[in-house]
Every structure is written in C-alpha cells, then in structure tokens.
Length: 591
Image (cartoon, rainbow, N blue to C red; front, side, top):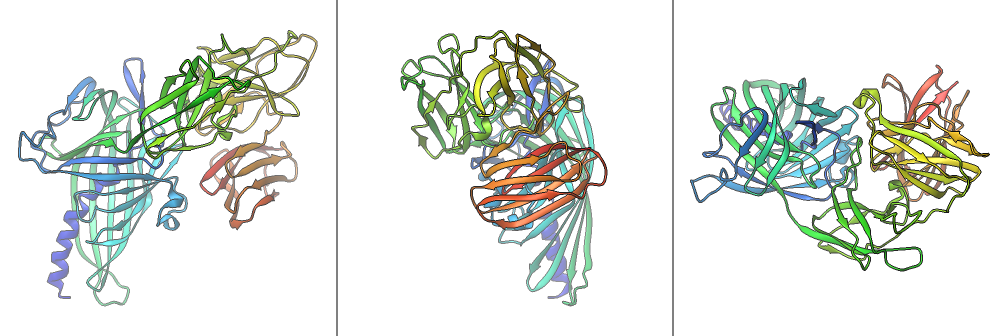
C-alpha cells in the first residue's frame, strides 16, 4: 500500500480516535446522595447486571448550552434533543451491562469486575466491549475490544485510566495519566495506535437536571479537562518494525451529569465542548429500557400471609460502602407485593414485617435467609412472578442479659461516621440459628436487652459487604456486655476491638473458611465448591502489597484446602479469595 494511502487512512483513524474518549467514560458507575446542601458521589456502585441502556445522541448539538457550574444549579436540557425544533442529528444506541466472565473477551481482561457492550454513532468507537475494575479506590478503565467493521482489535490501558474515585465531593480535584495501546490490521498492514491521556477531573457543580426523559435531583456535575496525545504506528515492511506515521494532540472539556442509586447507568448525560467552553460539539443522555415487574407473597411461619410490612429491592452486585436500596414498596393486606417498572436485570429482595404485629420477626431475604450473602438472585425478564418469602422468626428470650455495640465507617472511609438503620443479628452457637435482631439507631448504636444464657455470634447485615470477623460471646448471670463495635471499610465489615473468631462465609460458589486465626506458622484456606470453579487466593499486607498468591484454573466440586505458610512477618493481613466472579475478603493475624 503506498505511503499516501497509509497517511490518508491515518487521518481517518485520528478523527475516529478523538471520538473514543467520550466512549471510554460512558460507564461512570457513580452515584450521589444529599449531604447537607451538596452532593457526594460514591464511585463503588455497580449498575444492575444485565440491564440494557439506550443512549440518545445529538451529534450536532445545536440546542445544547454549556453547563453552568457551582452549587444548586438547574440544568434544563428538556428541549435540547427535540428533533421537531431543529435539524439535529439524533440517533439511539444500546449499551448493555454484563458480568465480565460472560463476555467474549474476558480472557483479555481476567481481572475485570465490570463489562459492557457499547454502540455509538462513531465508526471506530462503535461496537466496543469495555472492561473496568471497581475496587476500594474507585473505577478504573482497563481497555476495550473493538468489533467495529472499520477497525477490529484489542486496546489495553497501562497505566489504566482512573475514571472515578471511591468518593467525590464538591470541588474535589483529581489528576490522572493513562496510556492506551492497541494493534489492528488494515489492508494487510499491522498498525499500532497509542493514546496518552493527561486528565484533570473536577467536581464542578451540583443541582437538578432535566432531560427529555425525566427530572433528577441530587445530580453532580463532573468536568474533565483532557489533553490527548495520539500517535499511529504502521509496520510498512512486515518485519515487526513500526514507523510513526502521524502524531497529534487535542485538548477539550467533557461534562458528566451523575446521580446516585439508579437502576442502570448513573451517568445520566454527557456534553462535550471545546477547551474555551464556548462551543458544544455533541451530547447524549441515557434511559433504561426493557421494563418488567417482580411480585410474590410474604408468608409467616404458620403459612398465613403477612399483612403488614415493607419490601426492599437491591441490585445483585450491591454497593461496597452503604446499604444500597434501589426501591421500596409495601406488603399488601393479603401478603402480596409488587415492584413495578423494573428494568430487566439481576436483583435481590428482602421483606421487613411490621415488628409491632410480628414479634421476633427478622428481615428476611428471598431464599428465606436472614443475611444477604445467602440470598437467592432474582433474574427478571418481562414480569417475574412467584418470588415468595417465608419470614424467619427468632426465639423469645427471658433472661435480662444485655449486649451493646456500635456500627460506624472507619476513619479512612468516612471519619468514623455512624451508620443508622443496619440490621444486627444474634445467632445461637453452635447451631448458627438466628435468635434475635436489632437495628442501629441514628448514632449507629444497637442493643439486645434480653438474651438467655448461652454462646452467641453477632452478625452485621449490610448488602454488598462481607463479614470478615465477628464477636463470639458467652453470656450468663445478668451481665451487660458493651463495646461490641464494628467498623465498615470499602469492602468489608470487621470487629473494631478484637477478633474472637472468623466466621465461615457462605457464597453462591461454596463455603469459605480460614483457620486458625490468629495463627503462628500456617493458616488453612478451606473452600467447599458447589460447581467447577476458577480460584485465586491472594494474601495482601496492610500496605496493599500482594505478598502471596495461589491460582487454580479449574477445580472440581467438593472441599479444597490451601496452606498459607510463607508469611515472614507478624501482623494483620487480608486474604482475598476469588471464586469465579465472586469474591470474599477475610482478615487474618499472624502472631
């Protein structure tokens, strides 16, 4: 192919690559809640799995004003996408949210926690499989695989693009440098595309957003100031030597409207402008599609329908840092309930009977369990019926033995703020039978005023968070046991004062247990698998460094044990256990 053809093609690639940047940030999986007079964005939200989102694009943007910044804004874009008012270039494309392991290019991004398939109006940026990591730091873009007819190939990010922190408050500013590289084939020549992003992210405003679809409160305006360096390299001789054909730089601004606790994408709308913020290049807004309903009946232990109470709907992959309730509804007089207008996807459901009527009743999840880990997933497609729950009833207690404690965020996450409205469960040992339930008050405190003599374990239930330690206590003789405090980090709940025991954690993939804890020479990881699984075990020290790892590609059904015996220093460690797409994190101590 003559050089001039390569050069002309490079112009086309560069034009298309400049349209990739807005695509790479489409899945801002953040959310917000009111905090006094402003908005806080939490970046560890995941959207409802298997939802499908529509993006309505306007690539001419003739009616779009540049967003105003600052507090308490009103952004009215209700008419900005109206094709009846102007000759705008409107088009609608789907964005599908997927579990990474179910996608065709998961092997290229095995550490991804989130994946999506994207269509867009731009050639090279059309038909992309995007892969992300959501961890305690926030959201990171790992790269994508393009199946576009214009240019197919794998694009990876190293270093990854930092999309969003774990938490973002008004006026927070973050700087990031990322690098994308990919190899594609065009007319018989191997070509390499390289992009370096220098990016400043600013939480530049909050207020109310009006789109053609709806009005949203508690919206954060996130602005990105982007400086891009693009280069195209082509192997003209076929000898593996790539020659630089063209290098180019671009700077521009990207505005994101973000909101908390939505079913699908929390990225409500995006507008792209020039660096001077005088000209809008294009914009889009999102809306979920494929709505159905979930309904069923809540029963008491006698088989009679529950007549009063509330129902809670959660996303399958709940938020790491808070009690992530998508929707609430009431239990009807005949025990029935309905969640209506629910986008297709994967959910979890719990019932909370009126305790004034149903003494000693527990908040009970679908699957008739008192904790979210053992809850069964509800997968919706159209109208999903027969999602029935039989509430769990505890045993009446007569002895005046009291236990007290508190639940709060840790100092690194939210400055030891209390967490109200969290269910605390006392289980009777050794049967692990739920005996009594309490709820934290506005100060994060909980109390069990009556417990019979015996041995107990305390369980804290926050959807999306694993218990990595618990208090095992023996009560007798009317004693009051206090300071049974728990703290919440970005991915786990743990006792604040001491770890008496590590409680086995049930996952969808099997039973996970680490013992002894604390240990001196070696700890054993025991996993009881219910299906053939891929297992990765990583031991992480308090600085975040991986100090030991074990990986098994495919292990059969049954109990498997692994020894952790190569830790040279005493102290606190975390064991991260990944079973297929599910993960547990446990705290262990070496003496």
